[in-house]
Length: 301
Image (cartoon, rainbow, N blue to C red; front, side, top):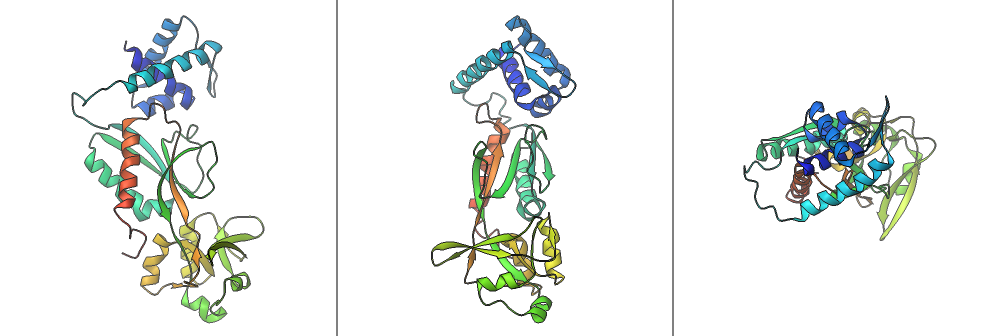
């Protein structure tokens, strides 16, 4: 059997924590993954994994073999390979996670265009507001909107996300239009689920200021908060890409436009820079270009 492929299979098993997850990530049958693992153990003349009902873990020999496999794959990747003989390009299954609002606004369309360019690729798009565990949830790429990435994450910046403060005409008629940032604290402000006060950040006079806000309604989904805002429940800070179509139709009114909410980064999160699958690398490059070529993607369409 091919030792480079066997090394790649073993590395993915170690990173994903199970042979089922490795088979999915490699677009390979579980039987084939098992055969490659058995061959690796035969070559190493040692048991490489502790097997339990919940998770696989490395033996001492497995830890040593994992380092050697990564060195082998790095050496193989550094060798000039030229064009693929079959010219297939990126292929295999890519599991992507992102928020429902971003998925509806642009990621679903971006993935569709990517698949048109790479017909041998497949994508499983998971929409969730939860910060997924890439290994445990078998996610290859998580797209997150945040300025607070954990320091141990491997991330590529894809774009920036602007926000807008808005409310329905009915709410403003009943409660009045805020004229200063500090007046937001006197209004019902809708925000993500939290305990205690919530802070909204704005750029003012070249500095970032934090305004404490609170309200009667919070939720864990921005699209739910957007619907509640349209219904008149209060003032919301929404992603610009979600709110601008409603503002253009007059269903919402932008508030305090002279104060710019702090932008958030849109990041692609993945597990390892080593042995990055071609389909994942192609998707990351595609998404960077996708956002760069559409500077008005957040505006009303």
